Image (cartoon, rainbow, N blue to C red; front, top):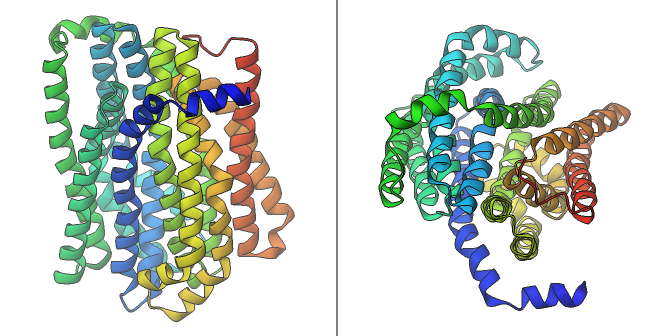
Amino acid sequence: MIKQLQHILSQRSIHQQVLVLAIPMVLSNITVPLLGLVDAAVIGHLDRSWYLGGVALGSTMISVTFWLLGFLRMATTGLTAQAQGEQNQEKLAQVWLQGMLVALLLAGVFLLLHSPIADLIFSFSHASEEVKHYGMQYFSIRVWSAPAALANFVILGWLLGTQNAKAPMWLVITINVANIALDVLFVLVFDWKVAGAAWASVLSDYTGLALGLFFVFRTWKKQQLPSLWSLFPSATHNMGRMLKLNSDIFLRSLCLQAVFSFMTFQGAALGDDIVAANAVLMSFLMMVSYGMDGFAYAMEAMVGKAVGAKNRDQLLHSLIGTSFWGLVCSLGLTLVFLCFGEDLIRLITDISSVQLQADTYLPWLIIMPIVSMWCFLLDGIFVGATKGKEMRNSMLVAMLCFFALYFSCASWGNHALWFSMVTFMGMRGIGLAFIFIKQWRSERFVEVN
């Protein structure tokens, strides 16, 4: 096994294949946590901590909704990559159309129900009235980006599944650079405070949608895919596999967001400074997430193509090459937090009480990249193989471990939250690794479900 590993890693082609897909996604994903840091920095330099707490609370609620619907990107990537591996042009086009129909339907439902959803969610919060007020203000504006945000999930997943990483890179960079520029304009120049940060996100999502549709049109023409009108009858009557996969990944995402939402709400119950400090540190966690997701996305595209082609050797090369570079990335992030973590905190906020709290819990972030890298890479493997049931089950176990640990250690205060979060990320990787090894040994992994 060691000799086989050395042989694969000695091949220049596998490293090129991984990096061609991963580097554009890493570069684009860096702008996502950068946006979170700019949001936190712009709002964090206002004179009250409840502005930052409000943005943290409101944006978490939007993230709960949009990330719950993130199955649109994951399912689309896996199914598209498999169609690409099969060289099935009609199926490739069908996946995009089916994904867009589901995205627009879900966006419409969310817009209709967003008011009662907001009332229900915020009723569970123990934050101060000021934080809840600004959180609700942010949420009520951001909901109007839903059609664009959900459509962008599908577009990103489809482009990546076609083994095109450059178009998604420019799409994500455009969305986030526009958001950063509008953040500065609306908050610092126009003094719109929390509302400015929300409107910046809405307008940037629609800017991204326009660019994304252009990229899809260009790819459609290049691959000579069938016209949309000819696909409608079969696409609307042949959605069983996509809906089943989406439902499994939705339940998996529900467990994930339950953990992250609890993190924010429970932090808010510990005080305005704690919730603001956690918002700063969660921005760092997003940096880990989006950095590692670049390699997870590469894994999705490569694994999906290998599964579609039913090529076990190609799959093994993809797994080893991507895991190697994922490890390199995680070690780099650990060094950044270890050497510059406190400096990064001071770049984000100049409120001394928030700085002090964030410094206290920084060590949890230093160990996070090494612990969590495995769950990101294994997520990529199972998304590419469209094995949603296994992802759902392993996430459920990890979530139960999180809550069991937190309530066992609740007397530790905010340390209990971070200890449980680190354990949760580790358990996600352990659960998927166990399933993967079992299916690989029985030669059941390279199956199209």
